[in-house]
Amino acid sequence: MTGRSAISPFFHQLRMTDSLTACDIRWPAWPVFDQTEETALLDVLRSGKWWFGERVRRFEAEYAAFQGSRYAVTCTNGTTALEMALRALGVVEGDEVIVPCYSFIATASAVVTVGAVPVFADICPDSLCIDPDDVERKITDRTKAVIPVHVAGLIADMDRLQKIAEAHDLVLLEDAAHAWGSQLDGRGAGTLSRAGTFSFQETKNITAGEGGILVTDSEELADLCRSFTHCGRAKRSQWYDHDYLGSNLRMTEFQAAILSCQLARLSDQIAVRDANAARISHILSGLDLILPPPAPRMTRRSWHIYIFRLGPEREPVRDRIVERLNQAGVPVLAGWYRPLYRNVVFQRAHQGPPHGIRSPLAARGVDYRTTDCPVCEQVCRDAVWIPQNVLLADSGDVERAARIIRTVIEQESGR
Ligand SMILES: Cc1ncc(COP(=O)(O)O)c(C=O)c1O
Image 1 (cartoon, rainbow, N blue to C red):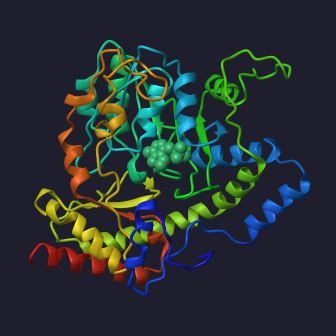
Image 2 (cartoon, rainbow, N blue to C red; image 1 turned 60 degrees about the vertical axis):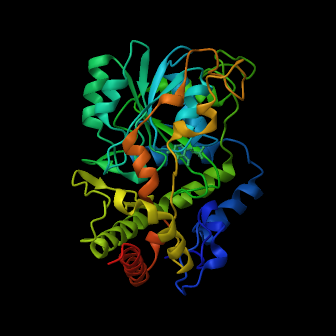
Image 3 (spheres, protein in one colour; image 1 turned 90 degrees about the vertical axis):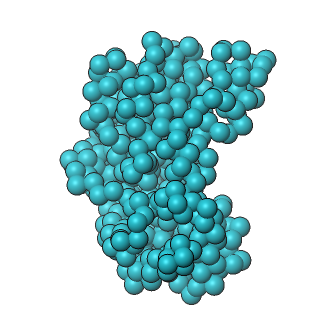
């Protein structure tokens, strides 16, 4: 394994509990980098060509090939990737977009940013991805699109979602921000619908600190997205010709240089994470937990997070288990601890007057106070996340951590 070794403050939640760390396992630091990133960065620096250019184009081609798409368009982050995808797909004011309520805020906020209304669907209790049955229930004559999230790298039920989308003439857009390299029957995440978006933010399995990308097989969609990232310039237009409404979301050559190095390492890292996830599942088996489900059709799985559920009975002790594990040096966290619609931004969305930042949905008849997705509510109370850098550790350390997890759960369950 390349990279430095230290106890990694992986997520902000963990930063708060670092001082409690007692275990001597030194988890792989994240991000992983070595001489290749250092050389690549110096090359960009010395070239004087720092702005969107050859290296960005090269990384786009590499990532498209890796994921198995015809086109890839980089941008500033996974949030703006979703926004440009929605715009390019023709989602406009008045449209509804069905999103899962177990996700990062960007899946829903991007919908609001383009002027549409997010409608929250519940998730499946084992895959934690959007529940196709609930998607069907939430469809109205205003529904334009559905955004499945491949939570933790596990691919959502795309077969069912495709059928629903076809039957109701909806657009499917994959939020693949956790699924770099994940494949279903050999087909990459993001290529199972019109387009897929990815994040390269610092906690992600491939990172340049920030960054995002969209993959698609549609040249027209790729061109529209490029235009959007590039101040609305059309493909072969003059520099000060702006044919579309756009923004400046361009990636820099520094980011692309780092990402090419990170991508070269990714396949090997996925194999390590996959083997370690199997070790954890083996050690935690028989405990009456809801473990990440096997996915035999997935030919590769990114394992951004290993998420297991304690289940409703152990829900009251979840936070104590997380705290005890952190104290024991096993960096786990509660993850998304509330369904998206419970955030103030949505709970107050009905209050007017409309405001660009506070509540663009105000006065549009939207009221999330009665939204209730019981499976997601439960998952938010009983899930435990093991982050991806822990899954990169030596097998012995991962087994030791899994045994500590097992012991703490047994003790807290009174067994
Ligand atoms: C599921 C999901 N979608 C979108 C995003 C947004 O990506 P970014 O942070 O790069 O804007 C994230 C980031 O954590 C995410 O987890």
